[in-house]
Amino acid sequence: MSSENDRLLVQQIRQGDARAWDHLIASYEGRLLAFVHRRLNDRAASEDIVQETFIGFLTSLSNFDDRRALQTYLFTIASHKLTDHLRKSGRHPLQQAPVDMLEMKLDDNPAASSLARGQERRDLEEKAVAHGLGSLLEEWRDQGEFVRVKVLELLFVRGWSNRDVAAFLKVSEQQVANIRFAAVKKISENVREAGLPADVFPELI
Amino acid sequence: MTITREQLASYLEDALSDVETSQVEQALRQSEPLRQQLRQLMQERDRGEHSVGAIWRRQRLTCISRAQLGSYLLGVLEPEISDYVHFHVETIGCSYCLANLTDLKAQQQSAAPQSQQRRRRYFESSAGLLPSEKKK
Image 1 (cartoon, chains in turn brown, red):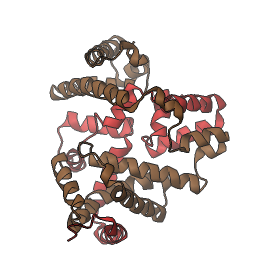
Image 2 (cartoon, helix red, strand yellow):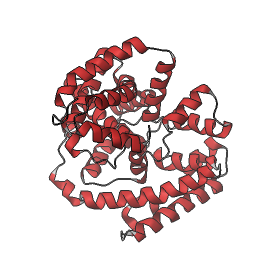
Image 3 (tube, one colour):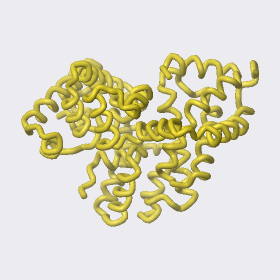
Image 4 (tube, chains in turn yellow, orange):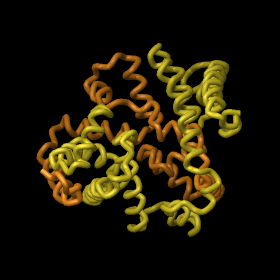
């Protein structure tokens, strides 16, 4: 389903269209159930969490920004419900860790220190990185340069070292370093253009 | 097994595969330094700090479209794209694409009756919350 279709669907749901709501449930319940079940391995409890996710979506409908991807928003609600369930059922792994850690992970309310970096600033940073990186990845995919995409994904998403990436993908460390350099240059340009300091992300230095 | 900082961040975001989630949880139970690293990461997140990796995951910059995942299951993607999908799902362990794949596989195996029952239940438990002006 395209983003445009999702926007239309949400618009219809906002007008109280029950058929649109039924359609949204039919479109998303399977993937949400798979997402939750993978973590819980309990069918009944997983279905309950998906049910709570849909209820959560409707109760927060007024806060939903149509520019956001609907699927990502639903997965985010499901993830929160899942964490809440694990806490209540005593299955959360951090419950074996010191109490303050557990409270930190499970606390839904940001602490006062979160004021250190406001949401507006974070959004600006996110937009700059996503734009720079997104255009580079798109360009490489269009050119069929999937090895470059893989290199960056392992470096940034998995946090692997240049050496490990090179060994896994069977390319030279120099190639990995060059690909990283190209990405860092592109992202840094976007960060600067957004009027942000160059050292905002330590991994780009 | 070495747990990277980005793996810990992905763990906090529920963005790891089930196998890797178990590995991270086991490592956390056994290692105080790793728990300290997790604590530090949570404090950084609380201060609003984020990494390029976190933005990549949130924006789902390399997630596969549902149509492409369907083609992947049918084996009709071009080899290099199919290879990339395999990498993204198996090596990166993207939990969102894994969930979509599992759902698509279930649809192929025609689990329709159970699915209909679930959908009815979700609908009936939530439809009362729909905005009321134009309820059909």
